[in-house]
Image 1 (spheres, chains in turn orange, yellow):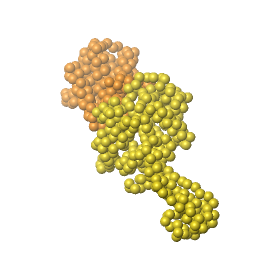
Image 2 (cartoon, chains in turn orange, blue; image 1 turned 30 degrees about the vertical axis):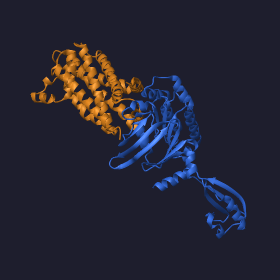
Image 3 (spheres, rainbow over the protein chains, first blue to last red; image 1 turned 60 degrees about the vertical axis):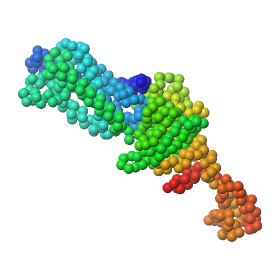
Image 4 (tube, one colour; image 1 turned 180 degrees about the vertical axis):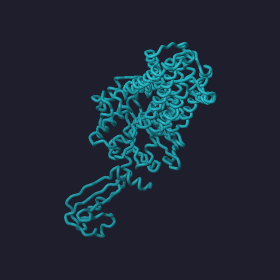
Length: 253
Length: 308
């Protein structure tokens, strides 16, 4: 195992976060705080409790998950797309690092950043709404698993994209709508029966539901199914990444 | 010297049907400087890229220090440093940070002493804390070389290292390459500046249209394929070369003031003494004479023309 290689990639990516702290940390924290103020405090005060939880508190897991998905994808996709774009990828491809080590470095750094952000937002939320975590271990497990899975998904997007438009395509046109429609701001029990069934096709619903269960023990789908869906998506991402490196897709001619 | 890199039957076809390398065989000896010469699109960069692992070969094998570069890629890549043709750098990193990154990527722990030595050898020490984006093109080129040397490789590939670099800096880089050779590093460089190969290479490989045309010791190549010319500056101009001198195949300059005799430097009898005597017999007097030997560039051009 080329541990120095993994550390070099990891440190490089974390240093990039430090250099762009306004964009990487401050901006998502501010935008999520605005959600708390508008939806949690202002509008939320007019909405009745959901499953015995005030609306302001209810949306915390959904908001963290929304940020976690978008930031994991954004961090990981940019981290591998940029070396391709500027040409520095040559060094990575000619270095004695295995595919697993490359993924470990890039995805590890992207997931670390996302988990850090998630925890920062969690702490920030405590300033706006009362919050209890029923299952801290599972909360952390969902947080880390989702960050790793979607960082891997972002990594795949970064390799697939051959221009900046493609890089933004999936996060903006697929992930964000799915996150908004995946129960971040509501329980699907509030929807008409038909839309409840349609919502079950949205993979993000399972992530939000499982994560929310770890806070309030309220859930749209069974927590075991939520966990299974995350692991399934993780397995799919690992499979695609393995195929990318095996074939050299978009990396090697 | 033993072979450090052995390339056997290497071929590469890019989709749909462009054959960049055709069954290339090449051995590179430990500790030598090999210049890989060829016109644009000859396959130089493809060859280097396959050895380094950036491009997949269609066929053939490459071994580095006895290890296959596909099945034992970690062992082969640890030994190699690559300086790419393009100025591709992490603009927002400092010089030291980017060297630390490269060293780590190649499996070595941080070592400030090595980084300092490399930076000083490339006169980059004063720039160590500067962001790469603030450096000039020549400095960026040095940073790329420093990155490639940061993990102390046994083999260094330089793909057009002095392209776009001024003459002074180019000569400084030749000094660096010679110092590397003195340290036992094997250097393979591709270049468009044939004077570069002439100045620093031990051996020359000429590649054209994906095929290695010739691999030879530089001095031997120039001796074998080079021609020498003896020119006479005449005391009075000639209109035509006298028939008595026809056997020498002399060239008369347009203004009639210069006669040039081209001969094979390897020939047992070069005919110079006889020619000088025959010039006197023909009543041709000369004021001065000079000799010229063909450069590597002329040899290269003639080889490529022949192959095409």
